[in-house]
Amino acid sequence: MLTPALSSTKVDGMTEATDLAAAAASREPRVGLRAVLALRRLLETLEVLQVDNARRQGWSWQEIAEALEVSKQAVHKKHAGRWPGRDRRGA
Picture (spheres, rainbow, N blue to C red):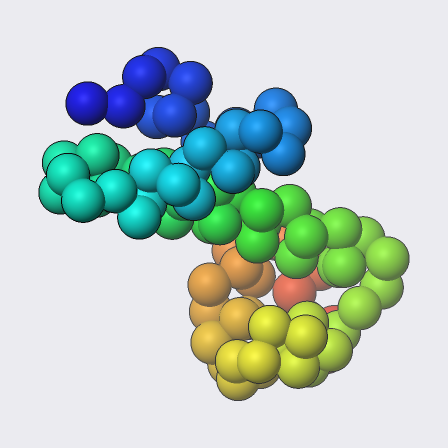
């Protein structure tokens, strides 16, 4: 089983990220799958933070979509709800 530090969705430094990556490669399925879950949560958190950052800096949905290599519609559908009244720009 993962330690509490490994089950966190926060990365306090490169050591924790490295530990998660190593755990994801574990031959023990429970350890590997829990690490994959933690990495998935971390990834979602980072995407939200960076999309919000880009929108605050005036990026269009198209620019964000290109950076994430997804369609404008996909990124808009996923993230526009957090930008009430502001999601029409570049939509």
